[in-house]
Length: 294
Image (tube, rainbow, N blue to C red):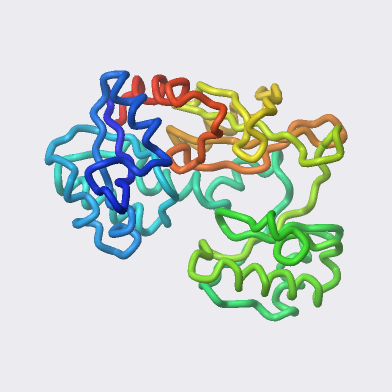
């Protein structure tokens, strides 16, 4: 059985981080080894120190933990390889599933139209540059995010643009987004065409988070933001795209557009996708740990 790598508690480094402790317990109950990662050391560029508690030759591991920038994940893979330990998800596969430019071409017909531009933390493209960037979207409303995350909880100020043709407003939203992301800005700026999703109660549209292992949907559950709502999405068009992406452990977030079509809102690496509180850890960990990690 494949083992599980989880972040250690920063204040109690011999124990799993509390957020992932239920998954660590479920892995142990399933008979899998659980080893600890110093996530803070990894983010600080100290990959060897981050894996110091991983026994040499510990065997193949799946990671379940906090998000890791793609370059740091590659350093993690190298540090583990030096200890004779492999990861179930390679660094190129992690980047392809984790960052929108990696997965978007495969899912382009199933997800809102998107454009992007690489940029560094703190860098705000000028209004003319942004206008040229979004021109292929043809106007209308849009959503601003980076390669990994949006700031949907600051919807009006750092996420939603009512009219992409309004370059001044677009620039203002992008600038605020960059400011709030600060050093956590991932990859660059993404602008996506806005699509309206069905929300029967007038609130947030319920999303389904589907967990895929080796191309099979092992769990169809709620999104962490709507943990009590479990839609039943149509996966007929999504499954071939997941297979074409070629990454072993991924998530797809799906929502029902107001015209009745299921749309892929986001794709993610399954190792760093959050598990909703209403989803039992064992329902995810058992099929994952049964899958060979290499």
